[in-house]
Length: 81
Image 1 (cartoon, rainbow, N blue to C red):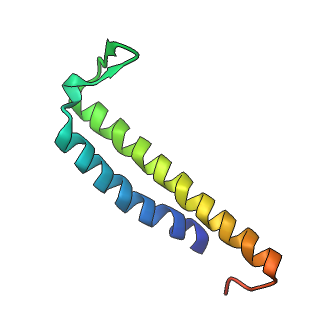
Image 2: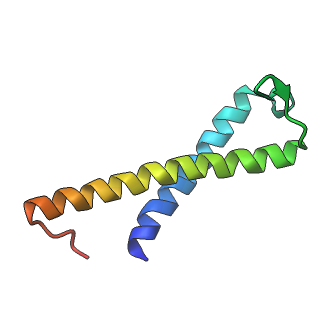
């Protein structure tokens, strides 16, 4: 559970910040996917955007935890858990 919080909480904060920056610069009504305009409400686009940013940053945090664990196992160190 502790490791999940190490991954999900920072990625939640960064995902929210990334969404604010992204949608400050771009209007959801102007988004196009593969040349076609996105036909979703602004709220749906904001929600989808947040979850995508959260997913990407959670994947990054999870990879960091995995590599840290792998590194500690190869050197024989303990992670303190």
